[in-house]
Amino acid sequence: MKMAALTRALQGSRIFKLNASPVYQVFRNHWNKDWKPGPYPVTKEEREAAAKKYGLLPEEYEPYPDDGLGHGDYPKLPDIAAESKDPYYPWDFPEHKRNFNEPLHVEADMYGEDRFYINERPRYSVWTHLGVFLAVMGGLMGTYYFFEDRKSFRPVLPRQYPTPGVVHYTFEPAE
Image 1 (cartoon, rainbow, N blue to C red):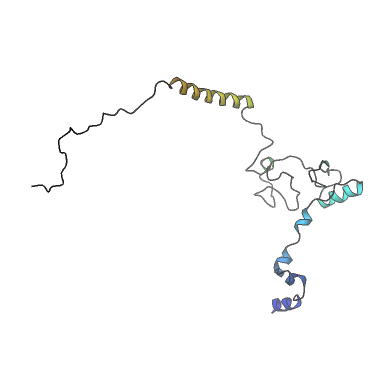
Image 2 (image 1 turned 135 degrees about the vertical axis):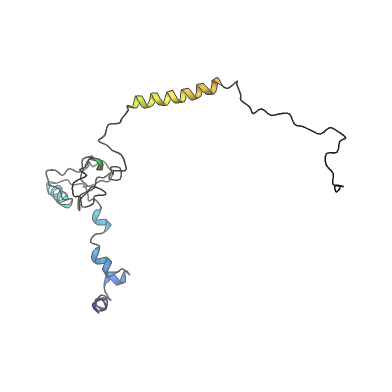
């Protein structure tokens, strides 16, 4: 009964004109434009407003430089991979190791646990990788050129053709 009364009350509202569910509108508290970064902050007041918008203290807020890439007032967060974060902390979203309303890094898709790990040094240096690559490729090319004139083949007997004039088959019924 209450849902019917709510439906009648909202018949002329914007929700029904857009053909949207009232339950969906209750739980949806933001639009994509709310998450779009604003213009680059120039004054101190704009910087403080942007810090408040992203839930940061004004002292720790630093925007990306205004170099034309379109980051606007989005905060320049430190490059911390998800693997570097404490796995035993009671995260709000433990699968991503982040809390509710925590701002995401601009390159957040790159710093997940299944992605690039920025804080770990590689096991082998670049020169070791290059040396192993050249050794493997050189060994394969050397083996190829060494055996180039020693072709292997499958031993096959010559074809056994019938002698001329001898019938090897017939269509006559056997007697």
